[in-house]
Length: 274
Image (cartoon, rainbow, N blue to C red; front, top):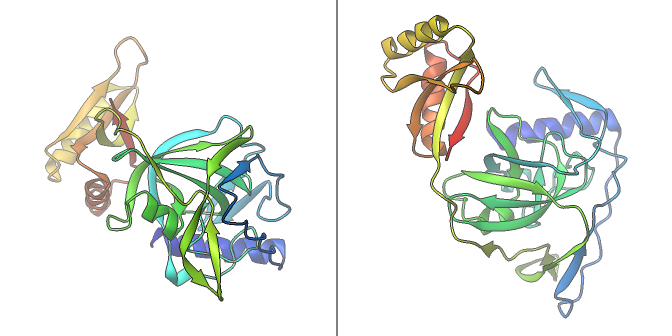
């Protein structure tokens, strides 16, 4: 199941649970106004139950976005879901700078950085998802385009919640719909030098007994994963972590994860060493 499809399922489930309605579109700012203030918005009455369940899994909505920062895999959803209701009640706009997140309060402004190229965007989280393993955020088409991740479909990103008021550039969109031009929120991505190289691995399990970890490594190698190994942090903890890799990118991570599932090994997650 794609991240976009799972996000749509979540939106419909939440809409059914929380009632119908639609948020009104905010007024479009003048093109002469080249900055806007980004302030932590009030928690919406929609899309913020204490917890909800999708595809048999329970998710607890955070009380606050303060201090939230996470690295992981981003995906994006586009035309098939354009104008469909989001979990916040407003229609999904693939050309707006928005995103879906499983647990951040709606709405929350976040800064998303593509760790492969240093490009950054600011988006407003107004939807729930993505409900796919190892995905931490689902971006709108325009946000994904600004991060240069449309072709690959996914990217390694850092997501950071924005708190105190700050001013960010706003750029007029070249597209128009319904006879008027739209101003995309923080439409222009900023670019920083790419971060230091990372090494990514697929972590399959963690064991207190080295013998148990060794048995899993033998099973993986018998299944064709010759690069399975045990990583132990001497002096830090007593866990022996079974990993496969390194993997070059998110696409290879997905291929390895699919291969592991075929031999009956699940519960994998992406880990990064610097």
